[in-house]
Amino acid sequence: MGKPITHKHILMKFGEKVQRVRKAKGISQEELAARLAMHRKYVGMIERGERNPTIRTLYKVSKALGVKSCELLPF
Image (cartoon, rainbow, N blue to C red; front, side, top):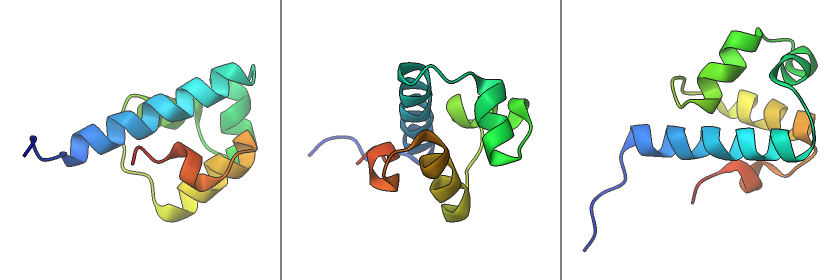
């Protein structure tokens, strides 16, 4: 059996997916932050796995990026 997946690992993988999708769509952190009515620094913290976004934030991010919420989840 492999190593258990840690909370930090999940947050980092989620953030990596957000960043990957954002960049693929040509959206800056500033633009995403504006779409979310959040500060750009908070978006950066999500992308670096430094914040634990709520389900509501996950939903808002997915809508702002034009993807399904499940596409941002690392599992």
